[in-house]
Length: 118
Image 1 (cartoon, helix red, strand yellow):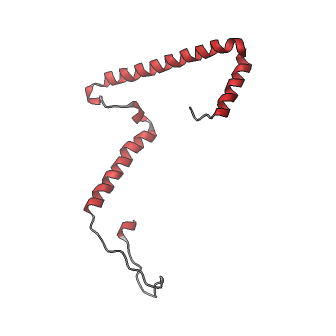
Image 2 (cartoon, rainbow, N blue to C red; image 1 turned 30 degrees about the horizontal axis):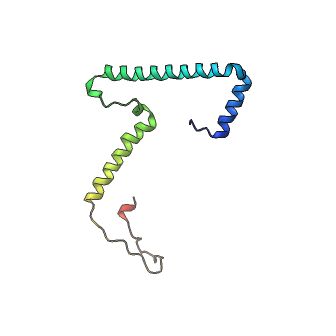
Image 3 (cartoon, helix red, strand yellow; image 1 turned 90 degrees about the vertical axis):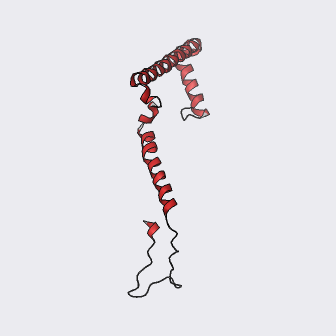
């Protein structure tokens, strides 16, 4: 939950007990719950209004796609995967480069070139 472990949650509860006291802690928790519900409702209403305002051509629009990380993953990574699939399907099988038995090249010898390495 929000990247918090049990020790952090226990520490937050102890701090809340010290700040609010045992008498007012239930009231503060109830108020925090109401605030969270209101924020969630407002966010859902804003998302629905945005989808309604954009019209039917954007019915599959997801506001999470506006997050830069999701945007890059969706648009760049998918394109790279599509390019890779199309090139691997049309690529011809090249023989593996042959390396000298000793592993060293002599003077003037050209090293083997692997076209898939770049």
